[in-house]
Length: 189
Image 1 (tube, rainbow, N blue to C red):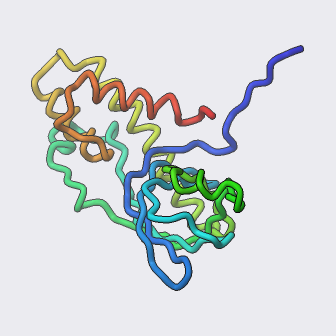
Image 2: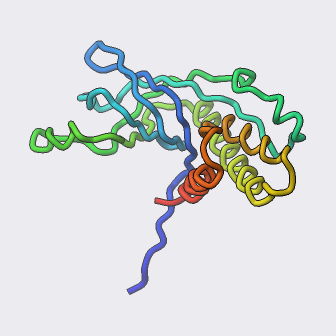
């Protein structure tokens, strides 16, 4: 019997931002953990929604390709300079909870959702974000490989890390592990 190789249908990338969603005429806030053209992983939900197609809204930044910039240009960048698209879509929870599993739902931290009503323009923006994050993650990992070459390189590592949503004050070894984990999970199950 041969083992099958399973791959995601779409690349995914980290997206650490607030998500607003509507359920029972209330607006709730949670966090996103990662995103792909096909869906989003939500975390820190205050409660599990009851509806099938959840209206969600979030900010999607247009991050530049850092490999195309000089080090002094990267050091001059700030997150506030990025153009941000406000994305409004409907998402369906991949995992539903029935009454027997209600207790399990209380302890659920992350819920994967697939987009059910997303325009092609929205999907294209998400795909561009994911592609740029993938390239920027590879760029950041290459900076880690060359970190001992100069003090400027260490500053660039810290700045790129912050611009990609990581804690720039983290110890370099731990920061590298987090970036490497995100790189490895771009396509994995």
